[in-house]
Length: 256
Ligand SMILES: C[S@@+](CC[C@H](N)C(=O)[O-])C[C@H]1O[C@@H](n2cnc3c(N)ncnc32)[C@H](O)[C@@H]1O
View 1 (tube, rainbow, N blue to C red):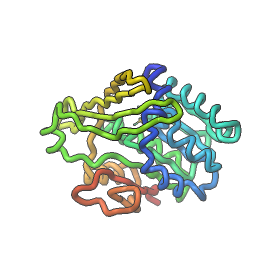
View 2: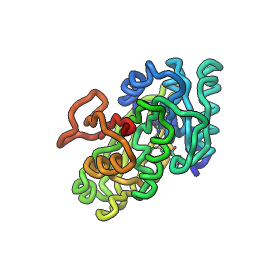
View 3: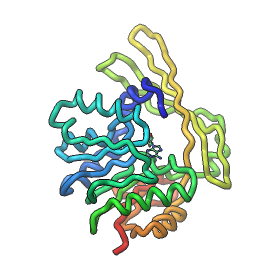
């Protein structure tokens, strides 16, 4: 479980990451009924869809994240907040009250599941939640295992973004600490340096352990879980998945 301050800061620390949102908003636009946001965290996607008028079931196993989501939803106003239903549940075992026409697992969510058993369990629950013709969309990173192995400890500088509402600047960086080439599990640290107007700097560290999926592996997993893959893209604009791509974006439907 994250601590309360990390959950509270989640939206601030991810405010710069918006490249996926246009796709998810388009995909959700004409969906009848609620959208399932799998691993919703503090509501980066759920709130965006709710602002568009979608109803969202926001599922996460971390009650601290869901409390932060509730605060963020309340701040967004009663119309937006009223469209979001939070669900504290494990994505490997959950059941919904009724089927949904769209499930989304955004921003690497499936990568938190480190074993094929857990990954298949989660895909099976998502499949069971979908209405006939319902769709499951998700994205994960497109790793280069060789690059990851050879860059252990090397700091990669990331975005530097101003947060005018709080008068601070956020500088992102990350580095891999460890990778197991057999299980494809990697541990990395995300560091955020927050500089206030008076020059004072506070550093925040987020530690993550993730599975690095290859496209072939995901193809097999999805087939075993009973999904047809309708599209696989290398970005959120529909570019083909090929060498150099940084993401894998999947559109799936239950095998009929
Ligand atoms: C990469 S973050 C989610 C990012 C989020 N989907 C977004 O787009 O901003 C992964 C989330 O999965 C949640 N999580 C991890 N294991 C879980 C599990 N077994 N069941 C449900 N949620 C889980 C974490 O609490 C975390 O909020």
